[in-house]
Image (cartoon, rainbow, N blue to C red; front, side, top):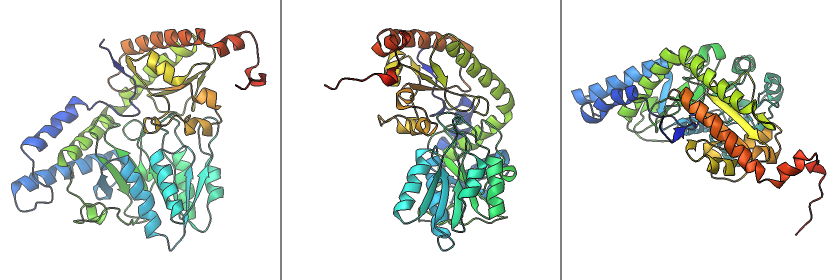
Length: 404
């Protein structure tokens, strides 16, 4: 086993060597522009893009013409929300989303609010799950879009997407789904779930960074969006710009491998995740699981360690790559808004650690992580006067702290 250990696969993944192998020729030999239609370099590049488009479409059960390439899921989310809002503003100005969406959706919704759109942020239950009936009750005659994620990036909770899709169809409202954490890890079928627009990306599934896609439904209903980027009219006018052919080829290969290996990979990763969870939680008191106990991503584990500061814990296990909260919000010192939405107090939210297991995680690494986490938490608790007081049976909530 080599140190450091990578346990942050929900933020990004190592590029699979098989993906790199598929990409290399498109950097060095088949380096044409996919829009160059009058020579073999362009044809080779276009062929690579077409093949990747088919690979991606097959995995999510869509038509390859419904795949629009973007720079990643953040751009896809922006394109979906802003593109729909702009296109359908004559029809209505109301959007429904949830309080635990990724920042790429929440901040885009807030930007639309500044432009006069009305946004409803639905609450989640203690396990971080949306109640489909809340979605139904929030719909008005002005609602043009529902945007609910497939699975949460911090706590791994999988939402009842199929039920939400059914409600959206009944009400004639478009349904966008940020499936960045779900595609390639669990089965995602846009027909079965009734999703009209879906964002996902390459770097969460052992593909390259800088490439993502937005699925845009072409029939029943045909979805139209206003582009964010104007230019040469690439991607059927929805996203102009020269296509990054090597990245697209890598994205296609990555999603194909995920699809082929999903069943056995899920069993293996879930077993490792359960061992990690059990190894930590059975050996220590005052540790709490965040998110849904069963309806969760196979590789995600989010635990709060009471009386321990999350950042101090990360510093105590520097040889293990982990995150507290989400990588996209780790620049702020605020406790995770996702955990707060679950009703987790700020002290416990500050003590939460997210473990992300993946394709390259080994059983040996899991055992090492269990051992190091137990030692680090015990060490920090030994130094904590709060933990000492709690052990003595003092109710910390009732303590009157003296002001300086």
